Image 1: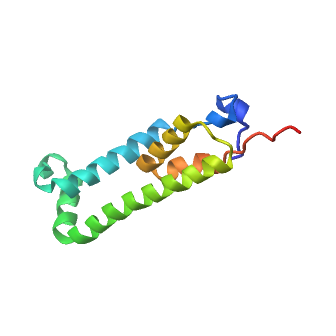
Image 2: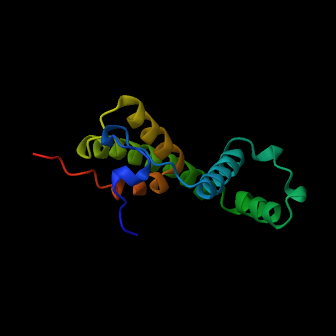
Length: 130
């Protein structure tokens, strides 16, 4: 996948470049994160029998692998936060100086992790004219 110049990405100003994570990934990652948070904070409220095979699997994992699941949950959020701070550094390196745009990148990366970081990583700002 070749990087697309900033002018074709919907923003003529590189200082405000932002690309949203695709909706399908937002739904998949958001749903997975929400379900994992539910199992972390309130496993007693999950209607296992109404979730079919997902409920059976979830109940089994929580009964037999509760500690690794909790460690994984915390690790994921630590990594997402670390990626978000990397995004702030990348924004400065790539000339994205608008504060609200940087906040959008930060929030999106905390929520969707590498799926957001990837779009900033491949972004090639336009060359500065001399």
